[in-house]
Length: 216
Length: 215
Image (tube, rainbow over all chains, first blue to last red; front, side, top):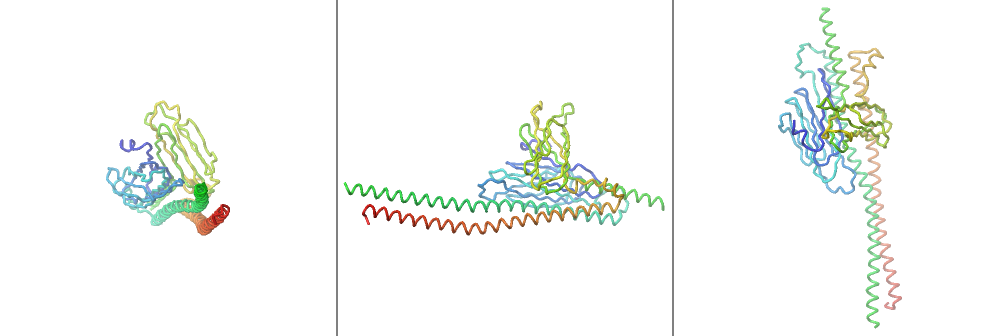
C-alpha cells in the first residue's frame, strides 16, 4: 500500500464507490497525460468477475513524432502477483477472471521521449449467478435474462469506447499527414530556389575571378 | 401461499433496487494531487449529454482538511465551473459542444501541511446520470418495466455513440482523400518549380556569358 502512494509524482486511484448485490457492471473510461510513469489502481469487490480492460495511446500534437513508440503496461493483482504485461504497445485489450478480490494495480511506462495522452477503460462484468450471497431464493428467470442483457450492452459500450479512442488516434495521424504534405512541398520548393540562386552566384563569382586574372 | 408471494415480492424489489443502483454507477476516481501543479482528468463527451459530478477531499487527518480549487472547461475554452478553497462540491451541466472536457484540480496555496492531497471524484455522464427514481415516480412504473426502460435507454445511448463514430469516420475519410489529392498536386508543383528555376538559371548564365563575350 505504501509502495503504491510513493511510486511517482502523481498516482491515480480508481475505485468503484457503490456496492450492489445484483449485477454490477461498471465501466470507467478516463484519459490522462503520462510523462514517464503513471500507476492506477482499481478495487474489485467480487471474485469470479470478468475484468476487461483496454488502453489506447492517443498521441499528442508535437510535430516531430518519428517513431511508433508505445507504452508498457504491467497488471498486478492484490498480492503483487503479475497477471499480464504488455511491452511497447500503442493499444491493447485484455480480459481475465478475477481470482482474488482487492486492489488491482496498472502501471504504465512511457517509452517515447514526449508526453503521451492515454485513454484507459475498465469494464468489470459481474453476474448474479456467481454471487455467493446468502439468499437461496431462485431469482426469476426474467430478471436473470435482463441482467445478462445488461452485461451484453455494457460490453458493447466498452468496445465502442475502444473504437472511439482508436478513431481519435487515427484522426490525429491523418491530420498530421495532411499538414506535413503541404509543409514538405513548400520547404522543398524554397530549398530548390535557394540552391539554384547559390549556384548562379558561385558560377558568376568563379568566372568573374577567372576573367579578372586572365585580363590582367 | 400468500407469505411465499410476499417474500418473492420483497426479493424482486431488492433486486430492482440493486439493478437500479448499479446502472447509476459512473466514474469514481481517487486523485492524488501533488503539492504544486495541476492534475487534470479529461473525457471525450458528445453534444447534448448530461454530466453530473461531485468531488470530496479525502483526508486522514480530520482536524485540518486541506482545500483545493477546481476548474472545469469545455473544448472551446468556456469555463463551466470554477471554485476556489473548497473541500467538497458538485457541478452539473449539459454539453453544448462535442469534444474533450477537462476537469483540473490543484491544491490551494494556503495549505499549511504540504504533501499530497487525495480527492474522490464521482463523475457520471449520459445514461448513468439519468435520475431513474423520478422517472419511475412520474410515470408510475416499477419492477421489470423499469429495468426494460433502462435497457432501452442504454441501447439508445449505444446507437447515438455509433452515429457519432460514423460521423468521425466520415470526417477522417474526407481528410484522407484531401491528403491523397494534395500529395499528387504538391509533388507536381515542386517538380514544376525545379524545372522553372533551372531554366531561369540556364537563361541567366547564358546572358552573363554573352555579356562577358565568352560565348
